[in-house]
Length: 321
Image (tube, rainbow, N blue to C red; front, side, top):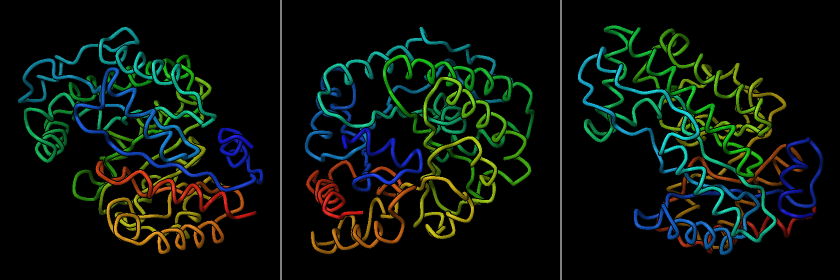
């Protein structure tokens, strides 16, 4: 099987020749855009030899005015495929795939509604501050904020269609908002879930497989129970949430699970080759031979040697299913 065929097999519930492997990381600031970004992606794909070809997305919803109160969210303009940051990401994706000569499964990154809604204010307030401000403004006067979030969500839907046209097979939807420290269950259901569902449904309509990624700490994973009907693959912070792989199988019955390894600690970063390969073999035997992609909780450290991912890819291909 080719790498792409291997991924498609597990997506369809079929037995592959070997369990597919998929990992990603954020590239250094001087290697995450333009031709340098293209080269960095291609080097990562080549050196790691993983089955998923995940294209990172550093083209974020930009600041469009100072937002200090709920009414200021009116500065967020409608977004379409010609909006500069969307066009830049789609051109970047096309350039990578045009130059990629491997047989992997291409996957585009799409930041979910929570992340995309804080991006216009994150530079001014920082990550913690922007998360807090979004919650405060929604609680103070939800209408103008939700109107802006709707425009952002519609723009992410346009990105999904553009990704498909660019040649990706799947979209990695990075969901935030499930942490207990920000929204209550009721607020999440009112303010976040409807937009998540809108975008996830549109990804499906565009003809892409949906890889649902849920990360950060202290997650209320029950909030995502109903998302299973809108996705094909689920990947979450097993060690961050925390929620074990076994518990995830129960929460998302019948879904393909991706993960199993911590992303920034433990055996993934500090273990010997023998320890890392041994853990990969254990996970594959426990969760294979179908409905499983070996991966990590989230992105790996930028400085992680690529050979550590290659060890995992080689280990997976050394196990006959």
